[in-house]
Amino acid sequence: MKYRTLTASAALSLLMACSEQNQTGQTLTTLTFGDWSSFDPAYCYDSSCGEVIQNTLDTLYFYDGGSANKLLPLLAAEVPSTENGGISADGKTYRVVLNPQAKFSDGSPVTAQDVEYSLERMMVYSTDVGPAGLLLEPLLGKADLLRGAAALSKVSSTIQTEGTDTVIFNLTKPFAPFNEVLAGGWGGIYSKADAVKRGDWDGTEGTALEFNNRVQADSVLKGGALGSAPFTLERYDAGKSVVLGRNDAYWREKASLERVIIQSVNDETTRIQTLKTGDGQMIARGGISNAQLETVKKLPGITVEQSDSLGLYGLFMTHQINSQGTGYLGSGKLDGQGIPSDFFSDVNVRKGFAYAFDYDAFISEVLQGNGVQTNTILVSGLPGAEEGSSLKYSLDPAQSAQFFKQAWAGAVWKQGFTLPAFFNSGNTTRQRALEILRQSLLKINPKFKLEVREIAFSLLSAQSAANQIPLFMGGWGADFADSHSFAQPFLASSGNYPRNIVYKSPQIDRLVVQALSSTNPAQRSSLYRQIAQLGFDETPIIPIYQPKDTYVQSEKVKGRVLNPMYSGDYFYPISLEN
Image 1 (spheres, helix red, strand yellow):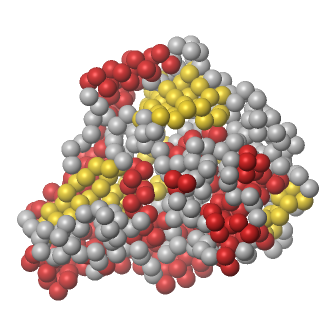
Image 2 (tube, rainbow, N blue to C red; image 1 turned 180 degrees about the vertical axis):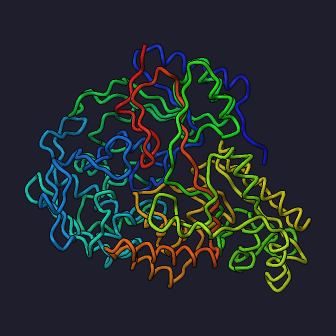
Image 3 (spheres, rainbow, N blue to C red; image 1 turned 45 degrees about the horizontal axis):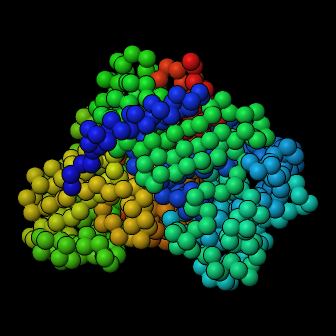
């Protein structure tokens, strides 16, 4: 598919619009790519919408500057611990007292009932595309999404309140990173009264089923909830831009920035030009390809910073493809003109792809060395990573061919295939990865045809959740700084990607539960190495690399925090120097 770019007239219009907006005091324009799925926390599980939620809905606690694991109280008066009595001796009860000064942007106080409602609503909704599993796992013992009245009836026992200022969380078993879970955007707190007034769930068990896994288009809060954060969602032009306005009634000190414009610009050249002219002051993390990085570093008045990322990117293959209405399977047969719906259920196919990718070329030419080959869920900086670093695939055409010849009793090698592979709009790194794979496959067998296709991020997210995307390039940032934050979403059957690609391994599921429940660091590392080995051997997915995070901005931007746990940027500490 042709790579989408802005026309010259569209680019000019964008520059003029940014220039006009930036003449009004402390207005920051940050340039990103792609679009936004939903501003309802029950549906948002990506960094684009997560960035908006992070800046419009405060959480109980938040990260301390650039630290990935140190938390500071935000809506809470203090972070609960065993030392201060906030966590029970058995590790299963968390008691959180709220900051009495916290209030929503309409002036109403943030109460324990708002906290209970916000988090229970996440679990009641249990949307296919959302992050409910992050709360379900510690509170109900499994990350499996809730379906049916019987399952939903369990939600009310997980969170209780005392008065209007105290929230009590009842965990099924100790869950070490529970505080960190509540620091993410899925832990954003919003006004119960406002949501109910707008026609959302009323907070009772009797109506829960009506809202369970509700279609995203029917979400009452898709345009944002009433929060207590430094900014409010002022305007949204679908697929084009988001405007955040300063919350002048913020219960802490007001933000320096009066307004933040998050502008979607899919063409990298236009992003760079907008930065050069000063009509944009910042580019979103990952918004500059490594191929352009050295050029951008030389631009006057521009600063470039890098930090290690707690992220993992790779290829995802759907094992049982839902072909309804997409046409992605072509003929639907192994006749060279398409693929069957269960094409990737054969491990030989998956391994054939794993040994067909040129990892060295990708790391050196596309990433320009700003990343490390990582073919398992053992991400550097977390338990077990160093010991598992020897588990690596390589470009090996002979070995790839051998696997393909065994796939589907030889039919794959004999007939070939035509297969669409997808990347989200504007992500040139993912595009190049798929192009490298396409070239390698053609050399291995000219009958292997990979069609590299561009698709809007929101559509990619929705279709992958519906098991419709045969092959796509994707990535994951840690929900919290623990190996569980990669093992569960990448390999456990309740995880985000296994649900998307229809993969389940009972053995891996058991090991994931064991690793999470253990309090022994050495034992946990050993268990995660076993999980990584199984994932490597079965190849349900193909992890490719762990990147570095790159932050590009005008030297006038002050206070930008580099934190791998942030969804996008946190604009509260940022100011613009005149």
